[in-house]
Image (tube, rainbow, N blue to C red; front, side):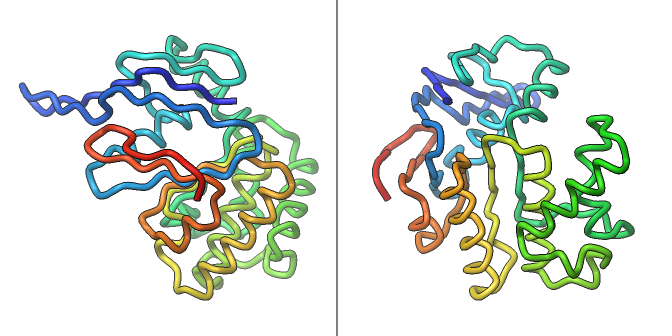
Length: 224
């Protein structure tokens, strides 16, 4: 599904250039559950952003389902990202004034889905993560674990093949974190490809495979 070959990425700070990825090569197959790990500054967030088409690489090759995407325009990347990826972030990124249902509808508004279909699909997604009875509540009326469930429903609503999760349990207590990982486990069994960035070894055991980074290089890639 995903193939990276000799990927390099640098960022400029004034006259200085910091190379964050230094020749990353990896493949991620359909329906895999992969944890990306490494210390702060290892390049894991940059790698996640490139995998999810949130950022572009400098040199190297990125293929998604056999299509080279490293040369696509920003608009082309946006369309591809909306079609193939769903994102779950540590801080939930919900809009406070909107209900859970309306938050989940947002990706479909940008996709010009008609209102009745938006509501139906958003309600179905919230039911899928166990929040059918809380769909009209604002984020402030929900626990942290419930807010993350809303974020997962939002990521699922366009039925992407790939879920990218950035420290999805990082803001939660252990009980809520375990509940969220139970949802990811279920989604994986249902056929979703999951790429998860985490610093937590216990959380990473949910993945089938760990990719460990250090100083912009993959130092280990194997079964969890």
